[in-house]
Image (tube, rainbow, N blue to C red; front, side):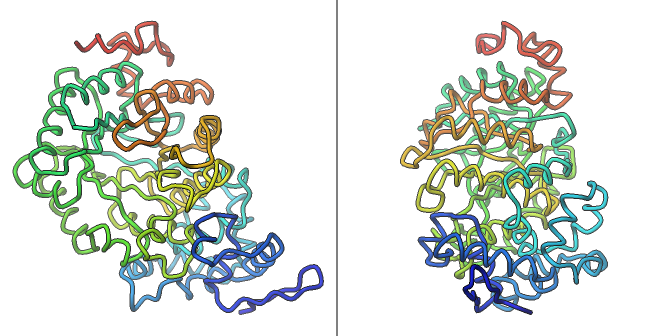
Length: 451
């Protein structure tokens, strides 16, 4: 295994596969903060050259966190399909990149379960933004809860009606408006300000009553901590999806108050008591930089750690996973260009892992980014085939205090790409007079429909 190369008359030598992966990453403020980024563009290119010559086997055999000390590594390594892995074990990463760009979806799916997170992240590091779009677009990863997300020609939206005090009246006002804009086919999901069993139960029941009364085909979810949701479920709450934020290392998952054993338990409880009909009923959120912020990055770069989140999520056959791409702040993704790059990387890596991938196209107000950066990523990732995005009132979350895609942005993304909501949802929107022939009507956006 060769870890050095000559470039521009200078020899670049790296001490480990982990260092090669870190320095081959596109520029990210989080990697600089961690002290593991390439010092300049020349070293970055040198690391990419070395990475391209390493084999798939080299990356699998050198996980960034050792198998013995990290349960996320164990989940990923133990989940590898060895027969599929053997097909590509000796392939160089440069050739693997070419394979992903040249092959059709069926050929890629034939080796997908043989990949580890390091291999998937390594491929992303060798791709341009357009490469990431080309590779992602051909990968279709559907999943079914009450309805099926991720089918060709669709772009779904999570209706996110957050409220600073969880006022039912305030939350439902946002739900009425969101549904009136044909948002909410992916799910209706609240980030609660109050993480209690009683509040979780109250909101879940409110969503269910609304969905039943107006015959809205979707999924309900309250994004409280998984332990809170488990208690609510035991007490009979109508829960279609169970949520949890996850990370790419055991240390960082511990900081979230979770472990593999706990999520295993939650999964089994949902299988027994969920109110949804389909086989996919888990919902996870991630985001580059969370491991560094919780001191659990193990000196690995944030892209590899993000890929490891997806390998962990895959264990639970989720209905949806989304990267909250610009939420953590400029310490990890400094500006609009880094956010756009990260969103495309995350979407590609999730799809290549084999999970139904969405994206919260977002940024924080102290980041060097703008509404135009957000809209650029939204258009690109919609064209790349993302399963779903967020629908937030006016694109401004008044509880979490960040900027995301608004109800009207979802309509624009669908119009630009020619995509439509999930079929059952669109049919109901037509019955309510909100849509016609895939377009919003003049009635759209009027919450008094549900008053």
